[in-house]
Image (cartoon, rainbow, N blue to C red):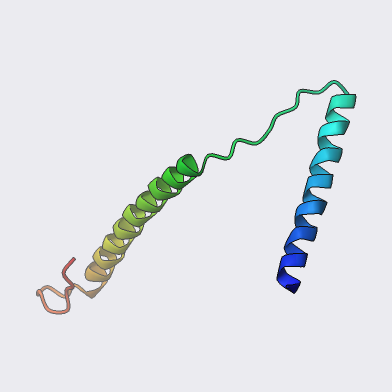
Length: 83
């Protein structure tokens, strides 16, 4: 019950703040832009960023293994890591 009342109070304060901002912009003849919240678009952007980050992490891991192999090289294949 306490969580519900806190959530409702945050929604009321947020709506009041948004109303103040939009009313001030309307008073000053500024263009009013409503935020575009498209959950599908947001999810697709998140997914592509996550895939790109995974690719970068894999490349960094391979680079790290290569550098360790260079440091561990002693003329033989001993101590070399596969990637």
